[in-house]
Amino acid sequence: MPKLSDRSVKMPASPIRKLAPFAAEAKKRGIKVYHLNIGQPDLHTPEEGLEALKHVDRKVLEYSPSQGYPAYVEKLVGYYKRYDIDLNVDDIIVTCGGSEAVQMAFMVCLNPGDEVIIPEPAYANYMGFACETGANPNNPTGTLYSREELMRLRDLVKKYDLFLFADEVYREFIYSDAPYTSAMHLEGIENNVIMIDSVSKRYSECGIRIGAFITRNKEVRAAAMKLAQARLSPPLLGQIVAEASLDAPQSYHKGVYDEYIARRNCLVEGLNKIPGVFTPMPMGAFYTVAKLPVKDIDDFCRWCLEEFNYEGETVMMAPASGFYATPGLGKDQVRMAYVLKIEDLKRALVILEKALEAYNAR
Image (cartoon, rainbow, N blue to C red; front, side, top):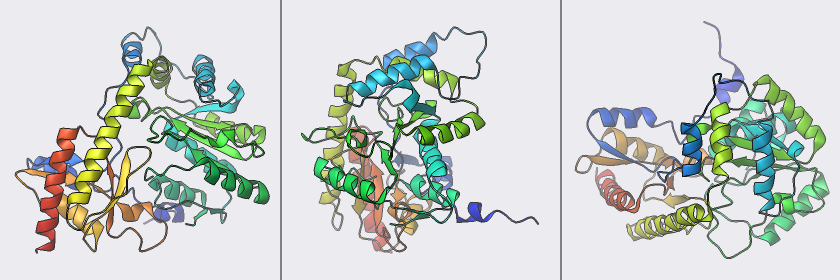
């Protein structure tokens, strides 16, 4: 039998989705599953985007340009200007979600054997794409970097002439009075920065698969365009929806922001009331990593889906071990997304407490 490639064998399974078969089986048994494992918001997509989709008037659903539709890219330039990020249309390549932008960045900037430094715990796909490119991940929890920290990072990037990959998909979700600082604001490393972006969480549009690869480095951009051309084009309908969504009023963003603040407070305060559980207060995004009183988090999360239910309900969480590159870390932690309405979060907390009691009493 032909062997699989080394690359595919070394590629880690997604800690966010690897338990999906167990969740599916639980649902078949009639168990209600509260999904805390994945950052899939339940808040509505902007009406502007939905209306644009409803009124698509095309006889042919054609390829778009590999860089993305000019009208959408031009509108993105205006969007970034609101955050004092000065770009031109050539700096932006529209991608199939933020994940493809990360993949492109690694493929363009890293050679097999290169080291990529990833603060832990981190978005699992960073490790996956590093393995895919043959690089060595050496090292998303809602941590917010201060301007001072970013300036120190800039000095290191400049001193050693490194690439800086900046995932800024959660810029609308900063729960602090500190001003937003982008890696694109850092002076002196303009040619070192690749910014990753996405509309998935900003507009609750995970399914349209629209992201962006952004850099002022012309050589990097030209190399990335080769990859963009090889995959032909980003999604046509997704770009139509994303372009229209840029017109969402400030009231939409404020409503979403306020809701996530309330959900964060509900989940964090509830977790810290459960005996043996601790989680810090996230200052951005909509995730938290919680320490649970169990020795094997992978076994516990699987058990919750395969063997446990409380009044016909259970919870699905992402084992945090998959968010670390360092072996052994995260074995007693879960990453949880507070993307469910408060009523569901409260119920999930009750179920989690019951699950811990039952699991540890076996």
